[in-house]
Image (cartoon, rainbow, N blue to C red; front, side, top):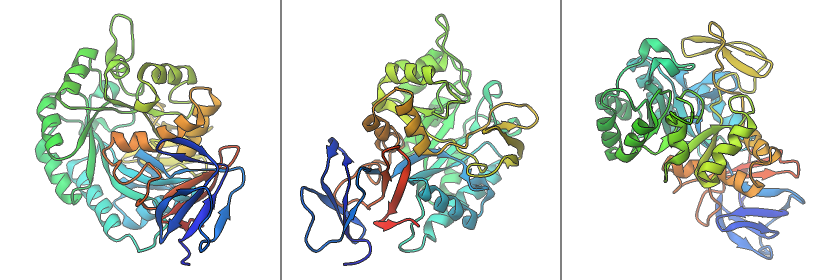
Length: 387
């Protein structure tokens, strides 16, 4: 049989109906066939012992890794990000931009599109399933590590231009709902198949709810870069906690959000509406030192990336596997639910659940093997072992 045809045996499998103990996952020509109680006689059995097999992680908010950033507009650098992520168990992402000039974002979108179109056959790099535009439609008060020089009101004309350069890859776009023209942008983006996310915002809970009623459905790295929860002014955090059929992104590195606050959000919304994201920067996987986030200098020290001039926490150096392990170690959710929060939940939040996030017959065999200690033991992309 071909090298991407085999049966995976493990302690258990994370399937759409839930965790299944034991069984054999059959893969033929890089595509999932199904699960059975016994291996097919014509397939090699790959036995992972006490490990478990899950869908490859889906990261819908990630800027870079391994000293490269999608804003570099460099397809070769983008491929290095994707290769490094696959080794960490992430097999699908939304390449994420940040607040920059209209032209810089345009070039980044074009660079991502070129990366997708030039993907080699049989590649074991993580797959770009779309683009997330994190900015520039934010408020300065909660700009975080976004460049205030380029903040502006939402513009459908800009979105159309960027989508043209992206060859239709833009799947999610963020804004502060209190900015002028937000309602029209949310409605227009929906017609283009683009999910609107709310963040880097000082919106009231009521303004957030108004945006959700217009069609917004995601909250950008909840708690971070938004008006906080207070018993008299619930803010955008309160909106995230109390709106139905919305998804709350969450950075679970133990630095951006404390475990107790993670627990509070998951209890408020339910695990099925909390999407783990990394918000990882180019300094992910790199030694401590000085780096750039767009035009802004950042410093990675003691495991924390901060703006050099303002000392604000920027993005993270988190991996999705690390986020899953933290959710379990903190006692927030079971491993089964934590895996879902890093796979099918973010996929649903970004409208890409038709192609990734679950182990289903007919899907590409994009899989991660988790050891008993929840470390990533192996990754498969298209049924090929990532080496």
